[in-house]
Length: 277
Image (cartoon, rainbow, N blue to C red):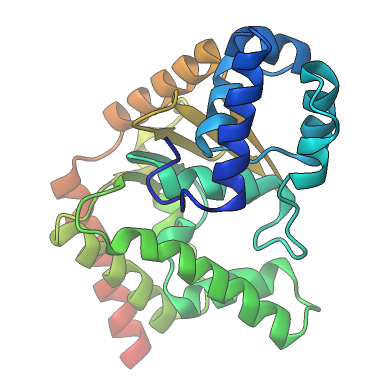
């Protein structure tokens, strides 16, 4: 079945269903097709249920391997204008179908938790010469992602914030007050679980950077790691297991949710006093 947020009549869902039919007609398992495509069998399964897009490059190979006469090349979903950067598009699609999202953020408030003013400051810092229209569109797309959290229970989101996220002043005290109060409100309403990794924790398991883990009802889990203008969505079981251990170690080093919430609200109060001074 397509992912829970995917329209079963959408081109991506229909193309995934056709891939499954063509693969089974050819007598190939997901693993066998994946080997020929140089991806994992679980990746093929995710294309078939619509969690992952069939890219033009893969579509061409699928046509050659399954003898489908160019069907997938002609019909693969190629949006005229991507909503997200290439390195993040697949991860954003996966987020929309995830049952759980666990994220470690070392530098900034996670995208889905950023209020508008905070998001605008972040994008302006990334692209200091961009036009206002470009920044407006980036902010709108980020806020649209946040609507995933309007559902009362899914996806279950668990965030670990490095203390740097609380202390780095993005946009000034008023913007930081708003951002931290928003996180606190989401935590107090039991919509997210949040922990803070304090400076006192010292060296920790994810010194290399950001980490996102996603689980699904009908597909294997994924890990996503991101750097400056790059990102990797990983489905290799051993790699995902290793990153899961990394996250588990982070939770052990972080403050408890109760202690974390108290710290977030305390820092927000400091910013509020500064903004009103």
